[in-house]
Length: 214
Image (tube, rainbow, N blue to C red; front, side, top):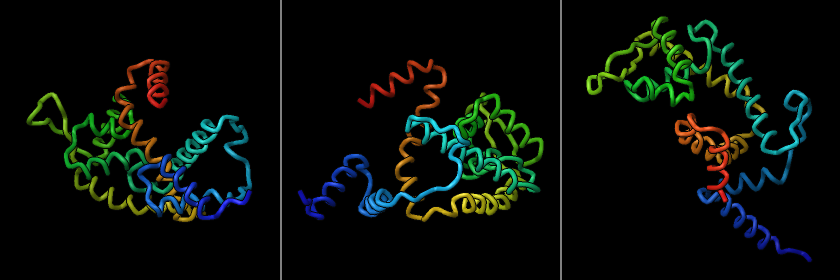
């Protein structure tokens, strides 16, 4: 049976809207076109050990890209006084949020309290950040950038942007926006849940997530 092209398109839109209720027509068009033409990729995928579960393969690809991003970013930051992209992220967070609490900066950066505190100490020692007592809650510490920290953010910003453009150079802009559209919900959801999940055993976390989705 030949399906009318209009009906086929409407059905595709209905499936998309059910899956991504927040998407608009432009998002749908990117999604639809991306699923029509799968480009052949040459080379060894994920180091040669390919998981046979779709979820695991996707996360492994994302994880390896994230590690490559960190390695290339470290190279891009050479000579700036910053050694890794997490340090740059911390400085940007402090600048954008204006004197945030120390713990908020650490948790927003998805760092453990101990490792985040150590990283902040190193940034303070190198003169990028200063720490002071919160006048409203003397048990808390707040952070601010020094003049050196402000300069470092401005200097490093262009290099980090160049690094991102280099890594994703072969992707069309529409494909990048499609990836953002599809994956942003996962990032928002688990960034919100991670502080709550940190102290719980994995089986309990797994059950709460899987059961809530059914």
